[in-house]
Image: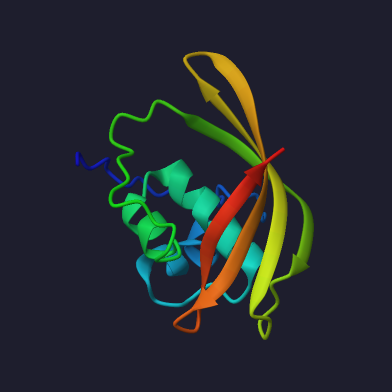
Length: 135
């Protein structure tokens, strides 16, 4: 597996929260604190794709659906923005949650949208991504 260099943004977090990356998704990526909700995990996973942090994506994937490897090294996708459309459950004391979102991206000069309804559960006391249904 080739390793893409993780390049954290200088200021604004890619997740679109309006907060600085260092105070938003970076602590989750660094492993210094867990995501407190399914939405926070969804945002941090989007940011992980944006900065090329495959290790975080694997670490936050449910053990029953996690791929053996994730190679973002040759990924030419440029992530442009995330919009959360709806959440169901997924609060701090819930056992499961759903987050519907649209992620905008560009590959080879062509724009695209990923519209997904993602399912999250707790595993080992932490929120993890279970699976998603494309819309």
